[in-house]
Length: 389
Image 1 (cartoon, one colour):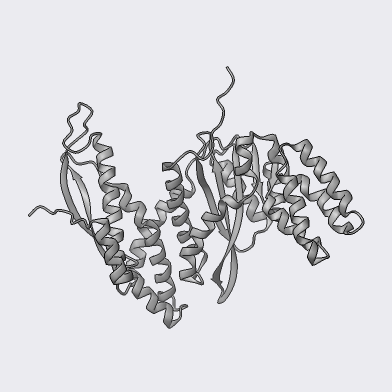
Image 2 (image 1 turned 45 degrees about the horizontal axis):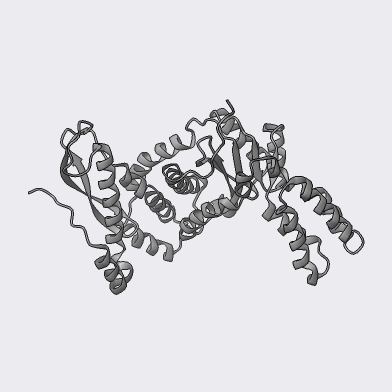
């Protein structure tokens, strides 16, 4: 008997979710991934259903059921087939990669005996069934090489580089410590964003940042014209050592936050923030510097420490004015990483405390790989002007 996928109409599915709540989530996952796999097969064939074309690569040949364990239990997907073989949809692998990583992380917590009874219950709920150490080992053997290959893949020309760090709780020598997760995002010559790499280590010190930056260079990253980051001392020292001649744009959002520490009167915080924002929103650098001079004069007597800090720090946030006006808004801050951090936080908060660095590296890598794939398949982030003839 030939297997045929049983699709549920979106309206019916929404009604089912409204009635059954989260119990309908597996059906939603199944529908979305099945639809993505169908579209991928159609793209592979080069023609639409029932179309005739000399460009056709093959013919559709039904579907094959494949049951996989996910965080919401077992789901049977309908994997599209082609007559001559040689086609396998990547949508299924990409869609479940981060789910698999989360399952493995929770499984490690359970097996190593460092989780609470509550986490053990969550594990069984998310995996759909109990997970043995042998199952974890087999799954890790399949997943880790894929993530390692992605983290070490060759890089190319990257005009704009955005750097940031976040922290995750990781167990080490019987104690819970904060591990720094370093993340590098680049905008390539094609105008698309990519996650270039990530690294996990205890401490966001210069040695960690320097090793991370050097690894990007070793993988072939070149052509960096601007680096956007905050002013963390370890990051600054490493940046100067690795890319000393590359302009640096200090995150304007962090600058406005840092300035508040020098405002001695609470009622002046809004006014100071407005003055700094006006500098950053100036149409060009000369006008921004003129506004900065006026701001320094304004606070020289009433808040001398603020004026002194502004004089040294604000120019570090004006480097972006040297770049195309259409790019400036997207390069002023590291806020473009906020969605990245939201995605990571959404997955890691389920874990709470990672059992080791490897588990943290695995889960964050899977999330970033998935997000980077989405960016590369999506719209152009910014457009570079063609070279002059």
